[in-house]
Length: 372
Image (cartoon, rainbow, N blue to C red; front, top):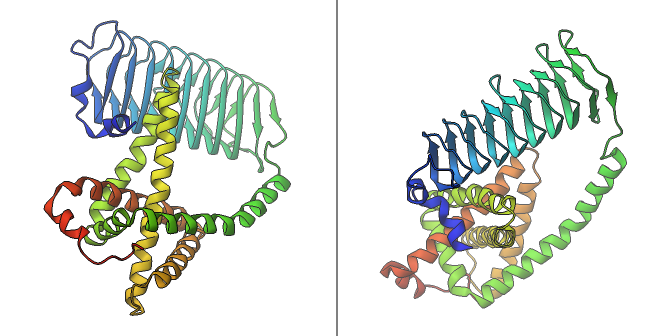
């Protein structure tokens, strides 16, 4: 699992096949992967950034923070990432899950298409059925098959041509430009998430928040009692190198999930992918607690309190409440949550590898806050 997590930190060419033109599958990974030669067989790649400039003869299974496909895919496409852009033809089926998905004007989808993302923009052509799930969905291209869309906001712009039935599910009315043409039947289906259910879910989340805070606080107490040196040194690293911690943590935060998804998509790697996802989730929770200890330390220094164990716990509880309040701020809250988890994760990794240095050994002999 650790090897899979750190694949994204290694050079891409170290894992590339010597002859990319062979019919055997090509496996590539790295901080950045660029396909600048045709691949006759399948391509399986995971990286922080992937650019495909040449055709792929077989299937393409891809996971990346940023993925751009400019070369044709001869068979099926399976992709997951933060930003996915398709600007070429896909002759088989396509399944894409990402934060932002763009099928550009040059995209031509010959098989069935399944898209799931926060923002989905569909230009170009689709010649078979299409299902889209998202928050904001925009149609601009020529769609020849039946289209099924579930989203909060759906916009059919003037250049769009839908040569088939369009079924949509949304809490708001679909927006159709007068210049757009829909030659099939336009049908609004019942929403999968009704307003009443949404209220119930939000109310349930509000009731769970105190329990979540108690669980985090209990985990923090156990962590400081069982792993005082680990907790103390992680806080010290975060204090001494906050920018480096945030940078490394952000890289791991966004690069490990595509690797896990890629392993799951390949079927044979499902156990490893699920285990990697679980480890990553636990690491993010521990990183969040590290930031909680960091804030607690700053509160103690601000109030000029001695680092007695009772005061440590009190300041930890106050820090977790402050983090929860920050996370509940509209729009900025999710960003604050991501920054907290990424910074703590980076500090953990830095202190783990700094254990081999003399400075880290010296840090272990310093004051005991926040250990028990």
